[in-house]
Length: 441
Image (cartoon, rainbow, N blue to C red; front, side, top):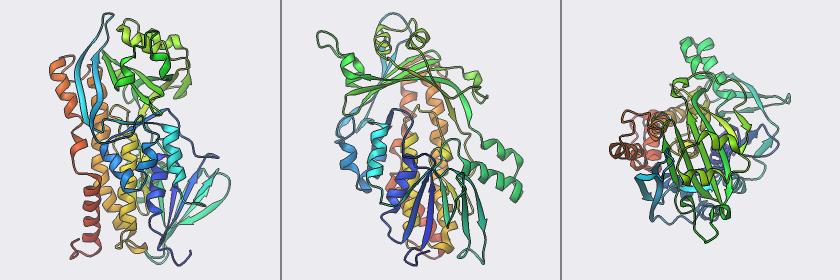
């Protein structure tokens, strides 16, 4: 290892979380960063991605706000705006609003591929390695913490060394699988922990589609509601979310149908398939005209089986850490998946770049990362599922709409907790206390 680096970080997975971590770590010239991506190029599955004001704060701190502003649905300016307009829609007659959720910045929306492109543009040269699908890793303890290292093995037969492995390899994470198997079989952990390896089906199917905005403007210039505001059309065991992306030129639609009793069961068949437009229309037959008009404009829908992870009891083991969907893959009902991965990346990078962190103290930095991020992300993972139940009148209040609206609003309270900057400071404080118990930052 080049002597100017205090340690080497290997990031396995080049999605939003992995690339954000790489960009954030690039601010520290004494950390060697390598991103290993299984595909031949960086790419994202899916269409829309949304973030909230707290995530925008991170992108600003990392110096990327101007570039992201150019590709958002509209340039974020901090003014209060509609995050979601909740509407009861599961009847043939015209539906009605039962709750309006407004926040500073609203929900900031992007095309997922364009979002990834901005991160790639900020990635240092020679950091990315493609065609590197991780199959396993092996720890060499050496002569103590300052000398141990990890050997990574890839499907193409190559291998490399690092001091810290961060698994950003998604919901089907290879890193998570080995981490939990090593904990159980190698360190005497309880066998039930193996149940956390595989994702579980949420019991929900999502039909996704993109609509050019001009298809939602009538002959007399009348605009569909979703052009102006992100919409949440709610009904029994079904709901639809729609919002504009790509500078307002495209509307992203996700129409979901659930069987709550199947949550936690195995979904048989591919998770993502193509389907026919009529499949979507039939699923929402009998809903209000505004919904039917929207769904009729989806020409090439796809069908997704929505999966999630059981809340993990730990994110780190030795010199290996999980980040993003590898740690807390969640349902999309609070638009939080990408934002939580970005918060993971920001906190972890701040810890790794801190003066207290070197090869000998990496374990402390990972412990501080887990201490701050695990409870926060697991809370949102659980809350996202609860929100989906509420949107489909499957929660404790059913379709008691006046009370349900207020309950839905409280589901978003996590947006107003400690800021990412404050969470970073709390993590660094914990790191300093572990490295030198008398230190107070």
